[in-house]
Image 1 (cartoon, one colour):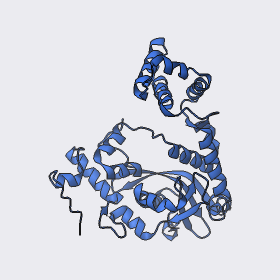
Image 2 (cartoon, one colour):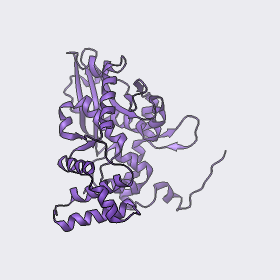
Image 3 (cartoon, rainbow, N blue to C red):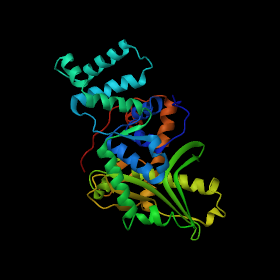
Image 4 (cartoon, rainbow, N blue to C red):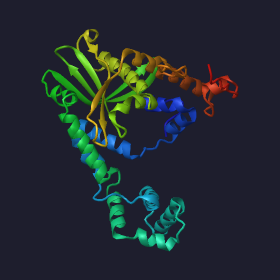
Length: 338
């Protein structure tokens, strides 16, 4: 377990802190791997594009789609119990079945559910998951989606420039999954960038992040705000600058230009062609220092403000309420109208 009062800061954590100090506390003390179709597809695509040699070590593709509905929940809970326990006794097996029955919410008799659970296709899937322990399980549809996005990105006229043409240029160095430990003041931070292109001839550096969406690539602007990507690109921009001066080994770092941050966005449903979204200087500034969304008077915090908040929570040792709620003595004014 990480120390809540002394740990490296990531943008994922700061985006959770923007939601609530309780979410951040849980993230540090009891980290959990998020499991969702969108995250699995995005992770698989990232690996296919940036670390293809690692794909078979990190992912396993199921032969069939896992069961859905209540049986899907029954199987999920059962597997959670079985894969996390070192007890292989019959009693432990039965306890896992009973827990799965209770949590999945079945109203039919336990014996009836157990008979369905023992069907060959479900048992084959369970053995596959157990044999693939430690890997992310992809359904056939998820694998096809990730593979389709990969092919679209590598062959589209706007995205292949950054994923194929420039990386194959002998005057360009392509860093994939570039991990940077850097400092904001004395605070240790950690950033992992999908791709960083170093153009030696022009002395330009291009930071890139790959995103997926199931709502069409035109919806990315909403995701940019909702998921805190404006903070992410700003946080990563400072990480790249630190890397340039302290770790890159490039001569005369002051003569290099860090280009605007680019998001390569792919449609996981394979309906839309991919697009590239480019963060402006203002996006980077607001991402760090905070500000307002166009047409809104609701303030949003930048990552440096959230770090200040983090210090405040660590000093007060109170993670129940937000800093603003404390400042209002837990009686927050509504003030909704102009």
